[in-house]
Image 1 (cartoon, rainbow, N blue to C red):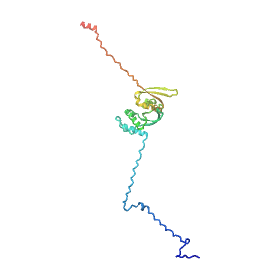
Image 2 (image 1 turned 90 degrees about the vertical axis):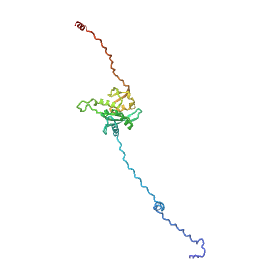
Image 3 (image 1 turned 45 degrees about the horizontal axis):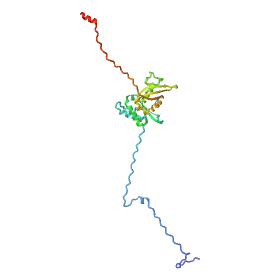
Image 4 (image 1 turned 45 degrees about the vertical axis):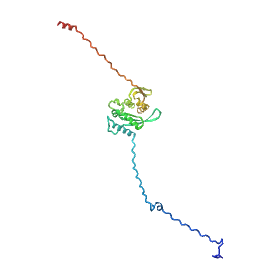
Length: 269
């Protein structure tokens, strides 16, 4: 039988009621991000948001000029400022060659050979040194100016006799004169070998040694690549052989001789 509990009678340890569970605290809802952080306070003024700066317009990069166009631009600008013979042409350089040579230190470096029209070189002799200096300062390499010449083959169908200036020998000699300019060739010695090749020893005036001393190793290699001929350069003092005119002594006047027959005829009268 179930025992009925008396409310007035104290309960023993075995019959004590279990304690009531503690009330669970209700979780408060989190405030939204816009209400808690972004919403301005009542007394705080609203901050102004700065507008983003406009992006700078991107300018297209200037096209890079080729080697021929860059050298031609320097030549045209220098010619337009020349005082003696100016030009209105926009293109003067015929061809530009970049050749590799070996210097005295066994290092490979580049050189420029600029071909100009023959008439231009003939009319602008005083401007050539300035052109060489301008191109060398711009490109940082040795520069040589050569006249563009026409070479005619004797076996070609040329009806007239080939001029001397169009022959192979004259053209190659003129190329060497342009490479050693402003020096003057004062002598040559040619040696022919058994295999058919020839070696030329060229003597230059000693006055231009200061201008060509740093290019002496480049000129024979450039001439070999252009003409397939060997050449050796050497500086020598130029010997001048001037014929001094003889100074003639003034001729003394001889006294007149008397004619005896004429005197006898005068006396007879």
